[in-house]
Length: 297
Image (cartoon, rainbow, N blue to C red; front, top):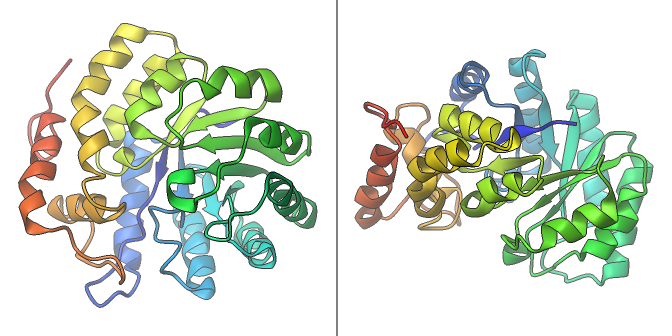
């Protein structure tokens, strides 16, 4: 089971929208050096919605190649058509990822039975560890703990990324799915508390710009050291909120460009961060010591 600080990595791009392979190399090397537990390639933060299927597969494959076994890679392979999710998950397996992350089908609002059958079909079609991803704020579709528990019975469905921010779900999920089913927070604002209450890690946007602090915070939370975890999280808290000042990944791509780690590329219909929000995100970075002397808790 992967535990700890997992980055939902951006897909770096040139200003003309082409994927920036050299920036991807820099980011992978940085996360290895900073102590990130694993990388999610081409999830929501990686602009899965703006990459075509071929690009999606290429970026997953390159991330695996650049990681070179130093850090696990999870491929984002969810889609709102079951056949497409199967194709992307097969592509991820061929690329050599360690697991796949599958968002619930968005826009078409399936029933709970539809969700179960969708994820079961992918799990049965591709022999690869699979992590479910529930983010109703984006998908208009909420997978219930009971449906999650049904899917947890499948041998290669190994975990859930829960981005509801509802901490009351955690004990219910743990009771239904058992101790060996990985439960990850997908909500940075509540991720620390999620781990302190028994979660296994966080799949994080904040980790893109503050990987070392996130790694330290997660390690403390998983060790049950509430005070240390909360002290470190206090440095990160403005980032947890202000990296969502506009739709993800708009602010985090701006922040990485500000740090010189990626270019100013993003694809329509996403746009570059509105200028009046620059000071707000910059101040959140300063609070965490990003780009300057780091504050200590």
